[in-house]
Length: 429
Image: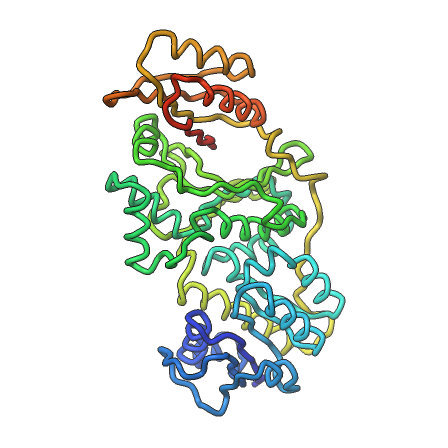
């Protein structure tokens, strides 16, 4: 039976989860794959903190070199996160002729194109299923299962923290700060949660999906991104009354020969499957020209789902190595199928708009006049229960150009009868 040696760099929550999975599933994996996967080295700066898994001290090291330069190690698993020194570690592992598995979404968003091309030139494999959607097999589906398809749309909930917060706000009518506090108490949100609630984490993941689905090399900084911090309970309630749920969506959409790439809070019709994805779960909707519409659903984070994806990559690459064929590597394939990334200002979509205005005659006419000036057509309008000093007015528009909407709202927000900054949420589906 073929033996494959693995070196793991990073022994935190995810690293410990991977080690535990490889240990507890050793016989199971051996029986299913015909390969004996051996953990040869585990590297981490902190070797004193107690982990939820027992390993022999003889395989522990704080020296990255003992993993990278060990000639017997076949696969290096990078689980330290971040860009530096993770990028250097992965590139050096490849130079040393070792295949790589990583869960590092930030690095792949920043340098994935470079890393994948480098690995391909060397005839080596890079596994990264765990970088998007935890245990959801979206990477293999896009790169292998849907290889015959022209992908037209990828739309998903790919950050469990934000989805949990929005779900709590919807279910309990609480505000953002209260929902965030609950998420932190339950361990679903970090002490400093900015990466999740700003939409940045979703943008990292969307850039990876865009590379696989459309061949577009876009960094997170190339993607229009809005977070959820400005969403208020009243917006969630008004959306519900209109038949929508509010979700933080990552969207990659083909429009003619361009690609829309954007992350932002979105109104999704209640009957759409994405609208009913609650809590910390992720869901990714993919539409291809042959396969039609598909929805991938599951836990998007945590030690167990992520370990499932990492181990899947290890076993798949181990199978490549055991075939003893130099041509049998699993390169990441991407072909650009759109000409360019569409500027956000050119995006056309429908909008939910909430104005907070003085309750005076002529206010609605003034707002409507400005919207008409910028060719924004109103689909519906309703005046909500007023407070002591102002009244919320909620509008739903027909499709409008983003640039025009931004100009209209800038002008409207300068009106003396507008008491709070106007809230705008885009509508999908």
